[in-house]
Length: 233
Image (cartoon, rainbow, N blue to C red; front, side, top):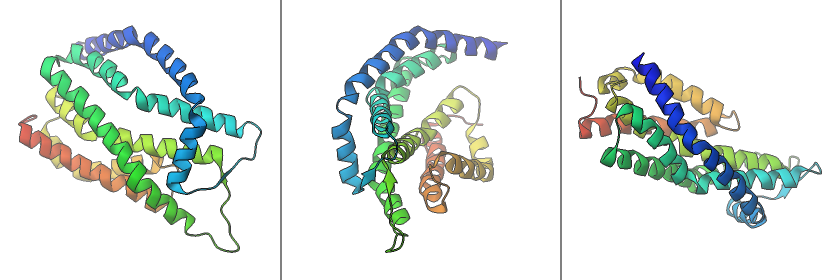
């Protein structure tokens, strides 16, 4: 019953901010949409990729998708504050601890997206396009390109949150540190499945580029719990 009450309290707190949040996301997406051609050019130049479109609505949908994800990227601090305030009240997380979770959630998200954009993504695209030849030329749709980039970058940002949620679950007593240590083999299996689902392409290279950092983050979460003395037996 206590857990049910906490969940209800979390949903109630979350609903208080949803309306304003959705309205702001819509307005910002519309504003960024007019800047999306410059944003697409910036990303395209960074990855050195020629793009084409094969449907009438293709470019419009690509720019709309890019504008939406750019909005989420810019509003991530607000989204994080809304999430942790809603989680903090029923689970007794407030003050300095709440600031700790908000700050490191944003830091890990932006760190994960930066790592993907500057390290993983160029390497992955270069590897995949390396199979082209005189007989096999890449013709990349702008819609598929934008979907690939946005999903891959945001997936990295989200999986980099793993340590902070490990700390939170230990802080509220759901799992002890010993639980994470004893279940590494199952963590590896889940990480492999998550990498297969979240990577836009099913090749082993992109899965490894996501899976390896994710496992290192899992181990980092255990180390953080040890250092902070949270989740002791």
